[in-house]
Length: 196
Image 1 (cartoon, rainbow, N blue to C red):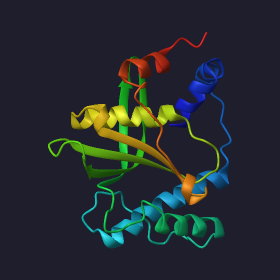
Image 2 (image 1 turned 90 degrees about the vertical axis):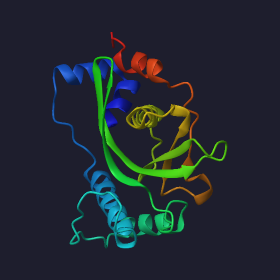
Image 3 (image 1 turned 135 degrees about the horizontal axis):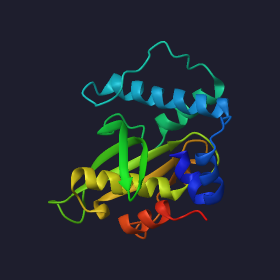
Image 4 (image 1 turned 180 degrees about the vertical axis):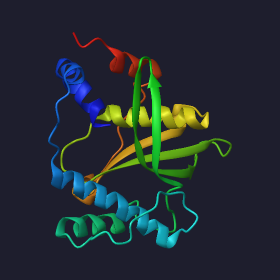
C-alpha cells in the first residue's frame, strides 16, 4: 500500500519509477519492527482465540527488542487489545481493481460490531496498525474500506476504517478519518489519473 501513498504524493515520480524501476532502500528497522509487531499480534490473538482466521506465525520470532516491547504493551492496554473482543480476521489479503490499476495489500484487522442504528445491518471496522510516527495516507484506508464493502456486498457506510498509531499518546492513537468523499468513482479518478 505504500505505492498508493507514493502515487498520491508524487504522480510523476511514481510513474517514472514504474517505467525505470530501481531498487528502493526501505528503512530496514521500520520494516522489521512492523513485520515483527504484526506477527506478534497474530500470535497474541491466537493464544486466546483459537478459531480466528490467521496466517501461520513463527513462534521462534525474537520479540525482545525494546521498541517492540513498547508496541506490545501499547497494544495490550489499548482499545484493540481486548482478547474478549478479538478481530474477526487478521492480515486479510486484498486485491482491488480500480479502473486499470490494481491495489494489493493486507488489511491488518477486521472487527465485526453490531450496528447501533439498525440491528439488521452489520457494522465492520477495519484497523491498520501503525508502528511508526509518520502520518499515513487516508487513500490506503479508503481503498481497504471499498474493497471490504464490495467483498461482503455491503454499503461502504457499513464499514468504518481507522489507523491505530501505537507510539502516540493513547488519547490520539486512533485516527478514524471521514472517508465519505472516497467512493469508488473518486478513488478511480485518484488512482488512474495520468501523472503528466
